[in-house]
Amino acid sequence: MRILIATTGVLPAGPVSELCARLSDETSEVTVMTVIRVPRTFLDSLDDDVRRSFLDDSTSDASPEEKAAKYLEERGQKVVAPIVAALQAEGIQARARFVEGDDPAEAIIATAGDVDAQMVMMGATRRLFTEEAWRSVSARVIDTSHLPVLLVPGTKIEDTQEMPVLEL
Image 1 (cartoon, rainbow, N blue to C red):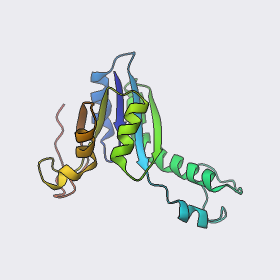
Image 2 (cartoon, rainbow, N blue to C red):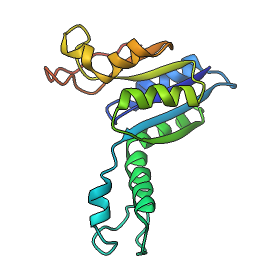
Image 3 (cartoon, rainbow, N blue to C red):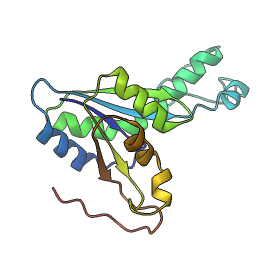
Image 4 (cartoon, rainbow, N blue to C red):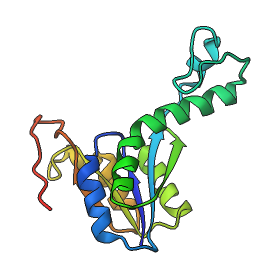
């Protein structure tokens, strides 16, 4: 099975990796992705002496594209690293993918097509049966994608601050 895990950092790594272990076999492919909005104008205004990379302390005269790519990599790693590590602990190799975009639902659907995913796993941070939830990224992916979408409760439900219960 080819699984695309889309996260913004709220997906609980343990339950996600356990679900993947149950759904996967040795031929499965797992991609963990996040969508990042890159503030290009802001990055272009910074010089390299002011902004130092989390990954590299060297200074250079980076082009705007290099700055944007480095920003995307740094932010993306921070978001997907816990899930990738939890998957590795379960013996599942996962590829990380960082996508620049302004519309997360469109980016998730496009990435699912790019990796030929058979299922999308993503977080649900709102109550699913409210009118507002139907405008959420997960609802848009469910509505637009032709793939099965598995929603995993995040760490908090935004509108009530309730902690969801995830039973496996």
